[in-house]
Amino acid sequence: MASDEHVLGTVIEAATHTSQAFCRSLTAAIQGPLTDAAKYLEEAGLSEEGDKVFEGVKEILRVDAKIKAHEKASETLLTMYEFDQTHTDFKKYLKEWTRDILESEGGIDPEADERYKAFCEEVRPGAGGGAGDDQELVIQRGQQPAINAFCPLSRIEVLKLREPVEDDKGYVYEKEAVVDYITRESHHRRQVPCPQAGTTHYISLESLVPARRVLKAQRRRARFPERPPPPAAAVDIE
Image (cartoon, rainbow, N blue to C red):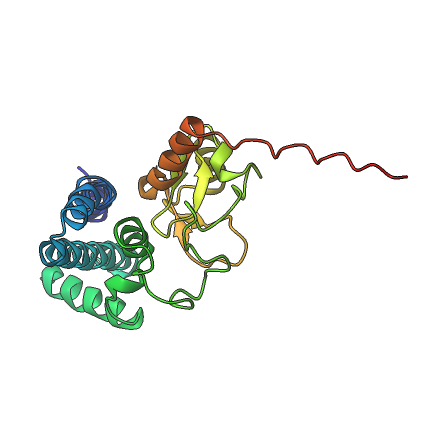
């Protein structure tokens, strides 16, 4: 018969897998249909209706932050709980630890989330907040398709990547390179340190999504390739 610890671990792992899949779907919704809807409203001159989409994105990011804090609380429960015959109110502990984790991380600030900044830059360039909002950023996103100019693993320019993916902070990688890195460094852990120099966050296979802005920029570059500069006019020297 499986031990209580094994059963709890299995339940938490299954719940975590489900919540991570849900978070990925939230990110995909922001990067896809919500961005398209907001851009349509802006182009149609319906900015007030567009504001509602912006608020909706913020609410999605608040939910995303709560889910991720709950995941951390679940992992804490699994590592700290000592099994005995007494009744334990797991729901109470998870609620308290989730709240503590959110407070320790400075609360929920959707406007500081890179996904919100990217959404703003896509719909209303310049509306994504000022420089310095994210202490990790060395290169500000601005009008660039990615925070980092090169994949930190393959050292290839992001606009030349074959299959660009990004983590939940907006850093872009070659998919094959980052999957190999996570698999190699995980050592049975779900998350590993971000390989980009100067960052402090962690990444996982579940956190990777297609780098939509990079893919869009690649398509734009393919349609409108840069023309070489005209040759310099010859100058006669007497």
